[in-house]
Structure formats: C-alpha cells, structure tokens
Length: 477
Image 1 (cartoon, one colour):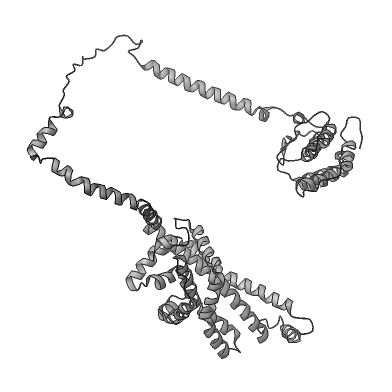
Image 2: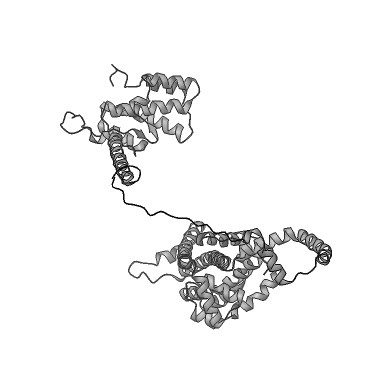
C-alpha cells in the first residue's frame, strides 16, 4: 500500500463525508464493480435457481445469504484502484475462488447477521487479521461511525426491497399488449382469501427483480463501508499527516542534499581551526559572563499607620461607591431603552366598531415592506413610471405591496408577516368585496408569473392594472 499513489483526497472526514467518499469510488468504476459482483455470484445463483426453481422464496433467501461473495469482489476492485492499481480481468477471476472460501465458516455462518459487515469485511480481506488481533481491530474500527454503519446495513436491504417492487411494476408495464396472457392469468389467480398463495410466475419474477435491486444496493453499501474504513484509519494512523510529510520531503530533498554537501566540505576545516577547551575552563568562561552576575537590592518598607480620616485618596472605598452607582445607572438606562424600544407593546390600541382591540398590523410580508411610510402617495402612478423606465420587477413589486398595504388599512384584512401569496389571496377572498378580491387575484397572478415564472406581462396589462387600482381616494369598487 503506497499512500503517495492514492487516487482520492485523504483527509479526516465526518462519518457521512466518508460514506460519500465510498459512494464516489463506486460511481467512478461502477460497471467494473457491478460486473465483478455478478461474476462472483452468478455460478451460485444459477445452481441455486436450478435446484430451487419451484421454491422462489428459498432461492431468494440463498441469494441474500451469499451476498458477501460479491461484496468481496467489489472491495477488491475499489481498494486496489484507490491506491493506484488497475487489476485486470485475470486478477479478478483469480480472486473469485478466494472470495468463496476465505473464512467461510465465520463470515457465512457466525457473522452473517453482523450489521458491521460493510466495515469489518475490509479487516478480513485487506489486512488479513484473525483471532484476538481481529477482534481488537474490529472494536477500534467500528467505534467511529457505529450508528452510520448500522443505518447503511439496514436501509440497504430495505431499499433493495422497495426498488425490487418498483422494477416488478416496470416489468408489468412493459409487457406487450396481447402477450401478457400468462401474466394476467397468474395475477387473476391471487385472491384476498389466500394472500400467501401466489403464482410461481409472479414469485420468480419478483425474485429476479429483488436480486437485481440487491446487487445494485450492495455494491454501493460495500463502497460506503470501505469509505468509513479508510476514514477511521486516517483519523487513527494520521494518513493525511504522513502524506503531507512525504510531499514536504520530496520538495526539500534537493535542498537538503546541498546543505549536507556544504556541511561535509566546511565542517572539518572549522573543527581543525578550534582548539578543544577543558570542561572546567569552559564552565568558568560561561559563568563569567555578565548575564550570570547576581544582583541584590534591599528595600526598606515603612510600616503603615492607621489613618484617622475616612476620606481622601488613602481610602479606596469611594471607588466601590462609584462602581455601584455606575452599575445602577447602566441598568436604569438599559431598562429605559428597552421600554422605549418596545413602547408599541405598552401603547393602548384604539377600539374598532365591534368593541375588540385592533390587531397589530404586519410591517413586512414575504420580505417586502408594506408600511404606508415606505410607499409613495400615488402608488399606481409611481409603478407605471417605473415600468416605463424598464424596471419591471420594481414596478410590479411596488404595485403588489401597495395593494397589500391598502387591503390591510382599508378592508381590515388580517394579513400576517409569515403569509405567502396564496395565504394573502385566501384572506382577501374571505373578507369579500371590501378588499376587491377580483383585482387582487388578477394582480397576484401577474406578480407570481413575473417573480417566480419569469413571464413578463404585456404593457397594456400593466397599464390596465394601474388605471383600475381600486384604492384611489373617491373610487369605489
């Protein structure tokens, strides 16, 4: 294994990033992985199908049981290709018998139901560990990303079942009309009274569809488990650091050679020029340096006498009083600021005709400010002027938010700040004629077509919307 030949970025990743790395490795060589998976499984599928042709459910169970054979071939391919190797078909064929017999008793009987199989399979095939070393290594590898591994194991089989049913439905749709007699007869033979008595044709077809789905999901689950295995080794063994040091060593190799050569040529002459000094003389020379001179300073500290005065700079209690006063002033100022900033909460609202308090009005709807202060006095006139200048979105947006502001102010429509265009339209429809629902519906359709669909309305349509704006003073709906 040569880290410098790796074909992917080696760095510490989170668990799901590691899964994505494994999926990317499978996608890069998908057809190679998928083909080798079936090369390992095809003899056993054919043999079990021949023996269990009249028992499709048992045939499918045997297929599921032997899935690790194909997983080992996928692991063989992606592990070699990650580290720069490109094994040929001959190497893959030679690996198939080993995948069948390697630790058969343990992997196919004792550990067949292990949910950690996508990761621990790499310990058997790539590291060749056995016994106590294998158990310790399993605990180390599965400790990181344990929940992700179990999600992969269970959701892989569940996805295979659903995908198999989808393939079965697609097969039923693609049977040519007039040639589906046997299939239709098999479907008609099933009844609710005996739900588990299904025609063999349907069971065999369903089994083949689920086998195809299992092969597809198992290829990617194996790749995801290998990604988690590589990520764990990167975290534990510092592969990224090792790669960085190797790249650094490669860059500075020439410089180091030049420095060593210079030291070899210059070193002996310099050594000969200096005469050896006795250790005692060397110690005295070092101790005679001014930095090692010991300096001593004597200071006389007068004894303090208790003062009879309670004020002045000698008593620091005034600092505590100033600090407390400052804190109190700060808290009072903060409280006053909070009350002023939220004065609308304490302000009494006016009463409307039915005796209830007027609800607070929305200020921003769908990111657009609709307060009267943010709108011009002549909304349709300003919108038409913007349209003539070529500012399509700005013109229609001004007309739309001006209309929302007016239906709130004039018709008392209770539009909330979290409402969408559809919510606003439903609220306007509930209020009735006072909110001009027909005009609002037409404007909403034009606005949504431009804002979300990119459909620019005609100039005559915008001019008509501006002229018929129903909220001009003195105009009735």
